Length: 73
Image (cartoon, rainbow, N blue to C red; front, top):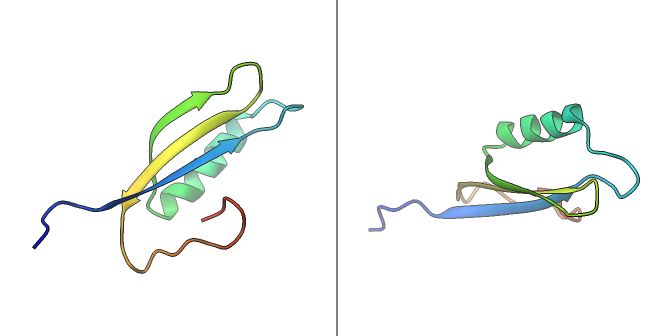
C-alpha cells in the first residue's frame, strides 16, 4: 500500500499584456483555489509583462475533476 500522498499540480499564468495584475485579482484567484484545496507552492513574474505564473498543488483525490474550460479547474 502506498503511504505517500499523490499530488496533482496546477499551473496558470494570470494577467494581461495591457493591464497590471492587481493585488485584488490575485487574492480573489488564490481564495478560489484555496476553497478547492489548492496550495500555492511557487510563483514567477513573466519578464517584460504584467503577467505572473502561479504553481499550486493538492493531494490527488478521485473526486477532483478538471473542468473542460481551457486552463480552468
